[in-house]
Image 1: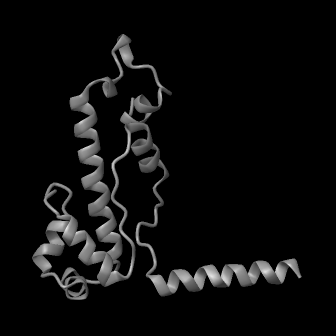
Image 2 (image 1 turned 30 degrees about the vertical axis):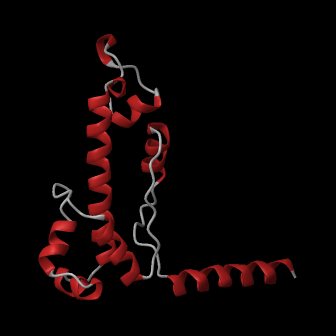
Image 3 (image 1 turned 120 degrees about the vertical axis):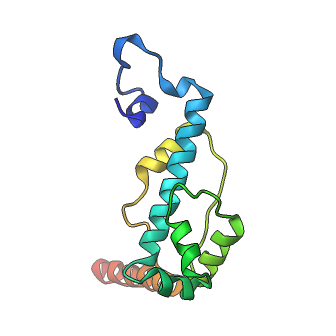
Length: 138
C-alpha cells in the first residue's frame, strides 16, 4: 500500500492495521520528505540543461549552493533563498500552510513540468491563447 493510497482511503491497510496517517509522526515525516523532494526536483527542473555552475551564476549562488538545493536530504534552504531564485527567474513563489488532505491533493496534482515560464513568456502564452480563442469564435 502506498502512502498516497492510505491517505485517500482507497486501500485497506493489510492485516487490519490502522491508517499510517493516523500518526502525527508519520504525517510530519511524510510531509517533510515530500516537500524536500518536491523542492529539490523543482530546482533541478528549473536548472534544465544548464550546469550547476551556470545556473548558480544565473541565480546569484555558487555551484555548491545549487548542489545542496538539489539534494533532498539537505533541507536547510531558506525562504530568502527561494525568494532570490524566484526573483532571478522572474517567477512567483507560493508558500502556505494547509491541512493534510489539501497537501496530498497538491502533491498528486503537481504538474510534471515543475519549471514554470518566466513572467514575459507566461503573459505571451496567455495572450496567444486568447488570440487563438478569438479567431476560433469569429
